[in-house]
Image (cartoon, rainbow, N blue to C red; front, side, top):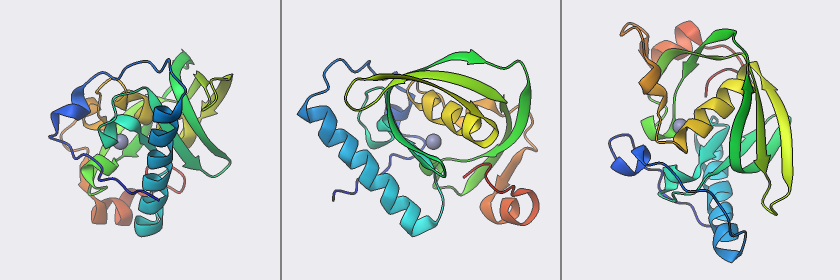
Length: 174
Ligand SMILES: [Zn+2]
């Protein structure tokens, strides 16, 4: 099991656009294992975190790992192909913020994502509410976009302790 250090906000690699995966060979499979192991390790240590994107480990390929209740998968070359007009408020954070800072932002209530699995097989799946905001967050990483980019109101920032005491909604956010 290999646990890698997650890059933190301020690292320019987090602002890069990741490349499309075309080769599903051993290099990709090894990177997928690292993603899975690192996310599992963070979940065990922090008790939170439902997803991680490859660029957070400095691997600039379009790959995301999700380990959430009801849905555990690699998403390779994921793309949002539909999104609801309806938005909803989310308190969002990120491993790359060490889960220490939360931001109150808006996400689409419902999205549809086309993606490939680790073998290259194609899938299409709809996500709503907490899963929708999670997928939007992780897919943004593939384009160098961070949740802090969506802050509209500077009052919508909270340290973890205040978020836990005041705003935490089960299933939403980290
Ligand atoms: Zn993140």
